[in-house]
Each structure stands twice: as structure tokens, then as C-alpha cells.
Length: 319
Image 1: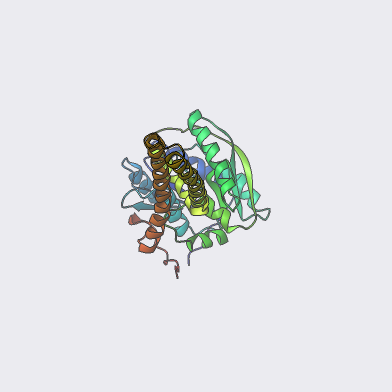
Image 2 (image 1 turned 90 degrees about the vertical axis):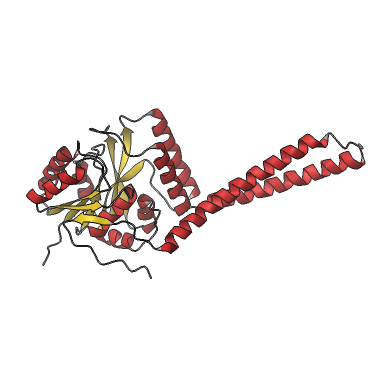
């Protein structure tokens, strides 16, 4: 019979070979200081460096280390989902492997949970080692998302948090393919609070979050929890209709009152281009929503495991 650990720590890994030894040491020291039973669950998301070999090395010398090795890169949010699927702990902490988020803060998150909270997330007070552009775009995105969604998604937070087992069980039954886990956790509810901290710069290596990945991640968050873009299309449609009506009155006035058949060409071209542009934007937004619906209906597995030292869990009920 397997004894349930007090804490599972889920760590998505992508090309982090230069950070893993120090991360492991700091995690073990922190959790041993709490005097709790724990497991470390590393999810290797198709790393191209030596991360997989290091994780196997950890698992061989420490039975508390579990690992999942993906067949390819499936993405950060999918890696976190896989970790939650396999975690056995009564509480589950989520932390990235780049050491920007201090492992020592897990102790504070866990103590806060003991006060009766089901979710305790780490809220950034400062973000060291990041460009002003990334800080500004992140700040604008989180504030925009909080305004256009019907749920209260905490601002200035990432996935660094600790959640109760009951929250993890609900997450397993949310089958979206385009994951936005921090939004899903906010949607679930329960008692939630936060702990403030200063985020450090990366210890080593380069971030796997390119500008393109960040844009797709932002789009996933918006489309998963807001229909505001669709409403914007409707508003633009109304505005364009008013504009087209005014242009029609102008054309009729020029034709029958001013007897001018040529001068309306410029306004006609402008109106056609304007209306066509709005239509293309609308079609694109609708297409994004339809694409996500299509991905969900195909019901492909979220990830494929190449290797692991833990048995796969029973599949969640998606009925």
C-alpha cells in the first residue's frame, strides 16, 4: 500500500540541466525543514539537453523523486497538467525549474494553507532580470484579462502556488486542450489567498518562453475565459454598419444633388477596405474559438509519456 505524501512538488522541465542539481538540493532542504513527507515530480517536456539523464540519476538515488519523460515538447501548461495528474500528495506545489521562483517559499505557502486555504499562490512584488518590455506586456495582459473575464484571475501571478488535493481532483476533470491552469484554478473557487515575494532572475540557461509562445499563451487565457473578443466583433459590426449607412447617404447626395459621379471613388475605396478589414478581423477571432473547440472534440491525449518511474493514473472521466 502506497502512503500518500503530505506534499507533492510538480516541476516542469525544459532544457534546465544547469539548474536541476541546485533546484533539487534547495527543494529537499526546504521540505525536510517542514518535517513533512514529500515527493518531487519532475516532468521533462521534451528537453534537448541532458535534463532527462539528470532526472533519472535523481530517481535512482532518491525514492522520493518521480519523473515523467514526454515523447516530445508538449508545452509548459501540459507538463504541469501531467504532474498534477500523477501527483499523490495531499497538497501539490507547482514551481518552474529555472530558480526564478525561490523553492524556500514553498514552506510559507504550505504554512498559509494550514490556516484553512485550498489555494495559496505566490504574488510577485518585483521581477528581477526581465526586460521592461516583458514586464510591461505582462502587466497589461493580466490587467486586461481581469477586466474582460467574469472570474477573478489574480494579477501579477504565475503558476507558482500550492493547491489542495480537492482542487487537483477538479482540475483532472477539466479536459481543455489549450490549458490556462492559473485561470482554471481561479474558476474552480474555494478559499484562495496569496503570499508576496520577489522573483529572481534565472540562475542559468535561457527561457523557453519566446515572444511567440507568450502571445499564444495570452490568447489561450483570453479565449478560455472570455467571450469579449466576440463582443468586440459585434460592436465593430454595428460601427461599420453606421459608417456604411452614412456613406450611402453621401453617395446618394453626390449622385442626385451634386451630380458628381467621379469624386466618390476615394471614399468608396476607403469604405470597402475598412469594412473588409473588420470582416477579416472578425473571421479570425471566430476562427480562433472554433479551432479550440475542434481541438477539444478530437479528444487526443494531452501528452505522450516516453518513460517514467511511476505507474500511469487511471484516465479521468470526460463524460
